Length: 267
Image (cartoon, rainbow, N blue to C red; front, top):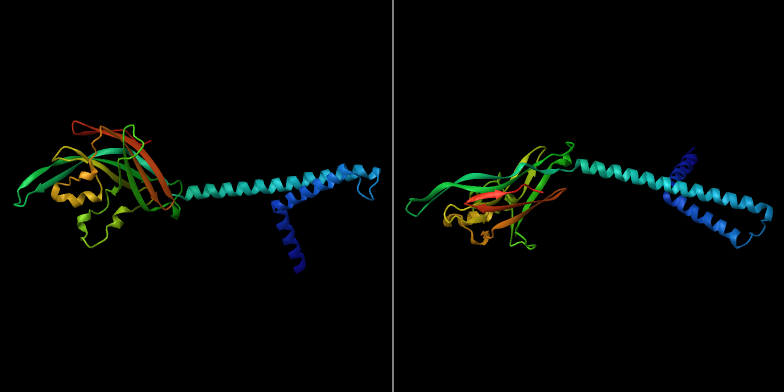
């Protein structure tokens, strides 16, 4: 019985391998080739037809077996790939994705006198995780945002920064000796939304600046960060999100007119 099971298992393994049919087809072609070269020793003319027919039958069967196994394996791989895609996070723009939010800024001088206090416009883009099925692996983890600014018509970005998640803590909440790297990452649960800050119009000099965690180091300069200045008339912004099973890029354009953001939605 044990020997029977072993032979049965070996037969199933051979039958389930595409190499069985491939090798058999090659052997069948060689078998037929002998007939074209000349009648094999011991084979008379009367047996040549049977020789040819059986070789052809073997060739067809071996080819069919190999094709059938390959087709089944491709179907199984396709199903596995579909299951993997369904189990992945699916980050999409949250409509309306690109939007403007007014944020109150207030600054005081060394004597405690307010030198500026008003709402300023912030340009932001929102995302949410909408996986087709709620698998544990559908939670987007350790997602970072990378923001590139391209002046209209340019193919090289003039500014590349790490994106700031609006929902994360503000850097001043950390001591200067603490790492702020954790602020660069976020997670998206099922249906959860997150927002990336893009730029703002300074209330002090009325110019447009990119915004991320680095701007907080310039609080004493009213957040004015010279290296983040966006002086072109129009920009294309590319926001790349990267994390576990996440790598998506979203594009939109914006310009500033009369101290107001004008923008498009991501493509």
